[in-house]
Amino acid sequence: MKKLNVGLVGAGFMGKAHVVGYSNMPKFFWPAPAVPVMKTICDIVPEIAEDARERFGFEKCCTDWNNIVNDPDIDVVSICTPNNAHAEIAIAALKAGKHVICEKPIASKLEDAKAMADAAEEAAKKGIISMNAYQYRRVPAIDLAKKLIDEGSIGKILNIRCTYLQSWSADPSSPLSWRFQKEIAGAGTLGDIASHVIDIAQYLAGDIEEVTGMMNTYIKERPVQEGGVDLLGTVKLGADAEKRPVDVDDETSFLVRFKNGAVGSIEATRNAWGRNNYITVELHGTLGSISFNYERLNELQVCFANDPDNCRGFKTIYTGPAHFHGEVTWNIPGMNIGYGELKAIEMYEFIKAVATGEQPSTRFSVGYRVERVCEAMRESAESGNWVKVED
Ligand code: SOE
Image (cartoon, rainbow, N blue to C red):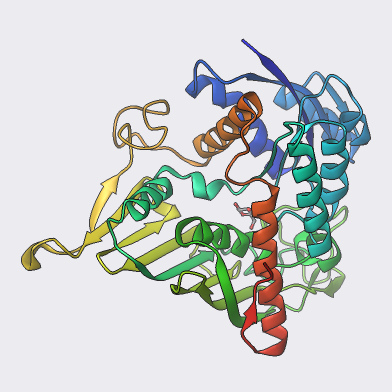
């Protein structure tokens, strides 16, 4: 069986998610397109790097990503760092002939996203793969929605309404991690979570053409946390802690118009008490409707106009062996998958792309388009106008 040596940069929450994906992928997808080998893990904090090496089963660890990019033994690179580091690492890795999977948003600045997409297209000429980790479009229920749409089962799409609501930053004593600093993150909810539903909306309904909306920051300063490690609201700091300003959005709300004439809305916040990973997508077409909620990710609700009047309504389809990748995960309906299996599905798509040389559906140019939608949203929030997405 072919093996691929993995170099992973950034040993935090997303680093763990990538390791879970790589390690479990061949357990589900067998024979695997290739087997990932945990070669080198990098984190700028030496103790975190060493701890992650031991915990995740890597052969080596380092504190400088150049060691990974310049290592001829490394085949694929996972980028799980804060957003402002993506471009430099990804471009260097692609130039060194490594296949790259990079966390979202693709970058913290539009010009970096463009440079990454250009570098990826250049590298693609030599068979190098790029991928952005927009994993939620790979939820089997979302893939089923895509199939139903493509088959025409709900007719012409009229409206798509998406939300991504979380609660982890609703408490003002949650510290000022890098996710609240524009210089590092580029944006708040817009890049961090709205980008996921922008990706899903474009996957299902096609390119967004123009947007109008607003962005709000509710908690204007937060307690400073030593080291700035992102703890996603699991730590609270006392009232006496030094505070510094938040310069990114807590909430984004937009109306969108698609190139194909459909309209819709996109809302995201990390300040919604009671909503945890509440990604919802509701589509209305001329022949039916589709509704999805990630907090019940094994379900898709569908309603068909052609059902008899006295039986028409939403019905729930439970995804399982009859659906995407269901035959290789748990093949009894109702056993269900979760975030860990989703990451394994994502790594299957990445490793399959590397093994076959065929770019995945979320290559860097797709992440760059999401970023251009975000840029139009930023401009609209400032001007109050409808803003066209750059083509
Ligand atoms: C924090 O909002 C976060 O970790 C995001 O950065 C991820 O993209 C999302 O999938 C889960 O929440």
